[in-house]
Length: 405
Image (cartoon, rainbow, N blue to C red):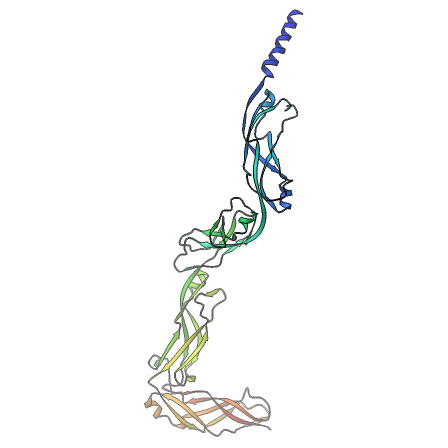
């Protein structure tokens, strides 16, 4: 019995003095957590300074409880729900413990703490949506062109201190690529730019997106000649066209962009046809510049002018009475009211002088005439015995009388 009592005393003394002995020490870098922030925001307020503070505590207490102390088990909180106006505030903080049920914090005593209070600044809260814009810090390869930026999202929601948020004009995404030859797409960060073009320090602000999906199309460029199709006539043939006709197109060429495969096969852009038999003298014509839907006119010129100049040709006028009517409407009879027309011919002087009126005939095709009795003006074709070195120029009509049989 005496031995048992002695052993019990020893164990009790050991537990009291060794196992459950108090310990002391400093717990550092405990983060300050602000509560009641939602109440602030409802009043249009926000904490702008003092958010990232830490606290150091000197604590004494039971060894089991003391050894549980850490940033995960000790909470330092400041309740800001009562703040009503912008300004600087100094408040005491609350210390609480989050221990397992088997560990009691009742033995813990804070013997010192630094700082004693927390100072923070409250300002007016502003929330705005600002557009996203893009810039290229690098460059596009030669014979390529950058298209229009597209962003997802196209705007950024930003909120924080009103004096900072209200400086922001837009969010700028910058592409740093050299010699780009294909469409660029990536998730990129951005910077806020002020209304005076300066970078805004947004480190204290909150945003709904930190990265912007940015796409910049890169398209192929090609300079393409403009052309017209000159149709021989009026004494001008394919063989002598270069001798008698000068064709000047302004602009001579345009810059086109689009899919590389589509541009590869594009050699020139035809403005249209010019019938030289209808060009009586030097003449300037205007043409719209046609372009396939998948291509884009980078030059921006929508019309071209074509100046046709003639030289080395002689014209003459011959009175022609050889008029023929063909394709009379069924059940009707047609007579030419016009008995003769002056026809202009053109060619070299020697060839023109050899033409007689007997070589020229006027033919009126009534196939498309209105089927009704009365007089009508009908366009005609003028034939000159198929001579190539002399041709008829101009357009002609005659008056025809149509009567029902």
